[in-house]
Length: 171
Image (cartoon, rainbow, N blue to C red; front, side):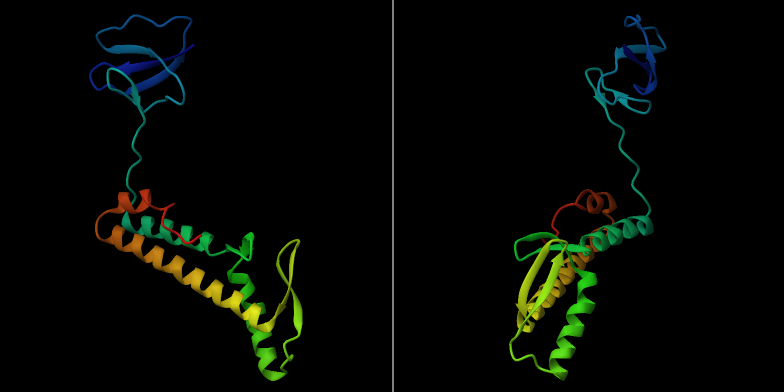
């Protein structure tokens, strides 16, 4: 069985070892069966193991983490009953369709538009433009959420901003 060797003075797990039985405690070390993911750096509070709290990163690192999360969120969105529809990369196609419509109006004809692999739509230019507007609104909402988290982090609550990283984003 896995046994945690615990520093008796600090309560910190200093090693996890394989033993046939739980050894007797000594003045320097306590011994407990290590269940789950208990490892070096965990703490023993006398009744249960407590996972280590990761250190709070520096502000510039936290802001980069938040920006990277926002970038990943803006790569796909839900639209017209489809999940994971590409967002940012579709804008150039939508823009070219809108410009082409201004140069040579289609008269309301439909075009085959691909939202994602296997998800095609017969849309008018107005419907394609509405999709573009939805992308713009979605991306802006992602930037707004990034700003909220960045403001929280720069206001001194880096840990809180990172703890809230996976919540509050547009669907």
